[in-house]
Image 1: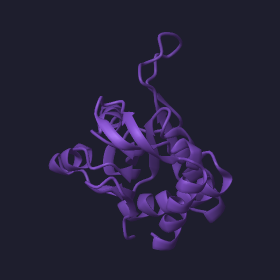
Image 2: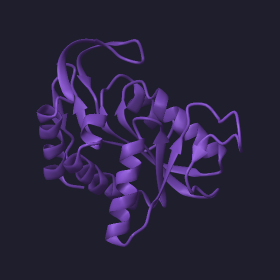
Image 3: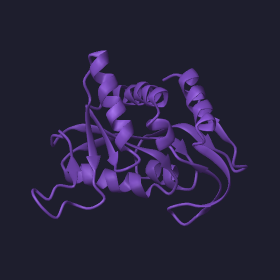
Length: 188
C-alpha cells in the first residue's frame, strides 16, 4: 500500500468536493462536522485508478480471491479493483450485495461471480457505525465465503471499525477522521 496514493486520494477528496465541512446528519443518525461522499472519488477516473490499486493491495495482502460490498458505496470500488486486477494479470472477482434479496428470478442477494468457499474482502466508501459493512459481511458469510479483511476509504471512528475488530475482522482504512473532525491519511 502506498502513502503517496492515499495522500492523493485525500487531495482529490478536497478538489472534487467529496469532503465538505458543515453540520450533517449521517445515515446512522449521528451528527458530523464533515460529510464524505466517496462516490465522487470512486467515480472519478483518477480516483478510480487510485482506489483500484490501493484496494487490490489489500485483497492481495489478505489472501482473498474476491472483493465486494453493499450497493451503492461499494459498487464503483469493486469494479475498479476487478479491472485493475485484470490489467495486473492477477484476477480478482467482484461482487455486489443487494440491500434486499431480489423478489423475482433467482431471488439472489449477491450479484457477481462469487463462489461458495471464496476468501473475500468486504469494502465500502465509509465506515461510521459499520452497518453497511456488517450487512455485506453477513451476506458473504451466508453464501459460504470467508471474510478475510474489511476495508473502507475513510474510517469516521464512530464505533464501526472498533466493532469490526472486536468481532475478529481485520480492518483497513485509507483515511481517518479525528475527534477534531480533521481528516488525515492512514499510513500505508
